[in-house]
Length: 360
Image (cartoon, rainbow, N blue to C red):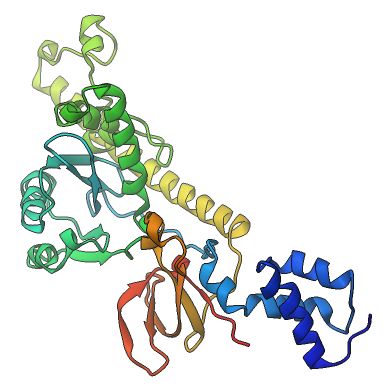
C-alpha cells in the first residue's frame, strides 16, 4: 500500500516500532516495507527509530570515539597511578604506580584507601627513589581528589585526571594491574587473604617481563642490563658475571661505560617502538571501531549512567540521562555539558559515554 499522508506514516511508524517492542532500524524497516511504501521510507524509518526517546535512553551500546596516540615521555617523566579493590583479607586495596615509558611498576597494599596515605607512599617509594615526574595521571576517584593533588602540585608536578568510569584513558596501568591481579590469584591459590605477601615477587616478575609495546623489560630500560636471576648464579650463565674478577680500574670503567652506552641505545629503541605501537593501535581502533562523527558545541546529547551496570535493582531504569547541551570539549576529549537552561554540570564526561540525542 502506498501511503502519502504524513500523519498516516507517523501512525504506521508508531505502530510497528513503539507498539511492537522498540526493535531496531533494520527490523522496523522490514516490518513496514512488507506492507507499505512511501518516498524516503528507509530514511524516515531511520530518523524515527533514532529519535525514539525510550530507545535512546535504554540502549546499552556505547559509541566508539576516535583516539589519538599519547607521546612517550622520558624515563620516569610521566607516571600513572591507580587503585584496585581486592576482596580478600585485611589489605583490601592495591595502589599501583607505573612509568609511562619503561613500564616500571611500584605497588602497595593498604587497609583503607586514603589520599594522605597514598600521597605519602608515592613520595617515599617513587619520588625519593626515582625523582619527581613531570606529570601524574590519575582517575577521578575520591582518593585522588584535592588533598592528593595538592601534595603533588606543591612539588611542581602536573596532574592529569581521567574521566570517571573510563579506565581506558589510563591504559597502561589499567592493563598492567589486571596482569598483576591475575598473577597474585595464581600464586595465592586458596590463600587469597595473604596476597600482600606475594606482591614483591609479582612486582619483580612484572619488571623483568618484556613489554610488547617497547620490546624490552622495564628492568633493562631502567638499569641498562638484563636481570640476574638465581638460576644465572646457580648455572653460571652469561648473565651471572662475577664483577670481583675485574682486576683493573680500566677494565671496570670500560665495562660500566659499555653498560651505560647500551642503556641509552635501548632506551631510544624502546621509545621509537612504543610510539609506533601506540600509533598502530590508534590507527586500528579508528579504522575498525569508530562509528560516529565528532560531537560539536551546542549539540544535544545524552549521557551513559555507568553506575547502573552493577545494580540489579535498577536494571529497568534508563541507562542514558538527558538530554543535555555540549558547552565545550576539553583537550583530553571529555565534554563539559549544561542543562537546557544553561546551568553547567559539575562533572566532566568521557566522550565514549556521550552520544547524540535525536529529537523529533
